[in-house]
Amino acid sequence: MNEQYADKKGSDAGAGGEEHAEKLIEQLHARARELYCGQRLAKRSSAVAIAETFGRRVTAYHGLATGGYTGDGECGAIVAGRLVLAEFLADSDPKETKVSQLADASRRYQQAVARRIQAQGSPDFICSSLVAPFEDYDDPERLSFCCSVVGDVASIVAEIFYDCKK
Image 1 (cartoon, rainbow, N blue to C red):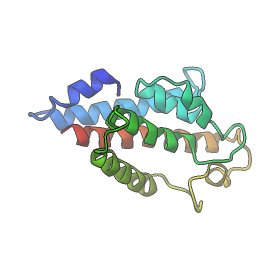
Image 2: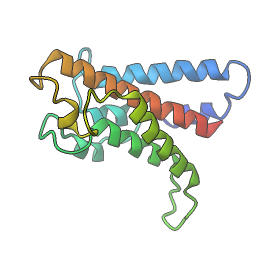
Image 3: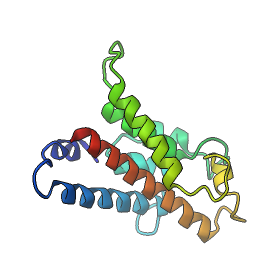
Image 4: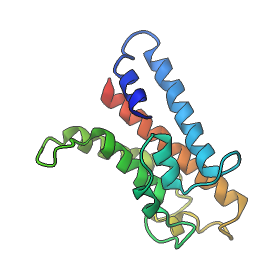
């Protein structure tokens, strides 16, 4: 979801708009998974995969990579999803106090993440807690789980962004 995607969203109100949006959301989901899973492209951190999926500069997103390094901190994909929403929905003027659209989107995002991302009994969304059921970080089941998280985050962000642009 880059600026071009954002521009198209405003014109989706007519017939076929919902169908077009669903296709774009599916494409973003697939793209995020492709970037993170590293099967056809070089593997990236979950946060970088989310940033790239939405056409954002990735430099700062590298700082969210915790899983492969320490396991400490909230899942990079989940944090990156919040940041992408803020990049698109926050006012660029730091003196501006109108935050209702971003606040609403953030609430919806947190609710959707809690509802759709299965924590497999994890008490939180800390990376090491989420992947604790897997014996080894290189476990294919762990990779599959994390690929699903990355794809779901991309879908959630795209759905919320689409709803905000209606």
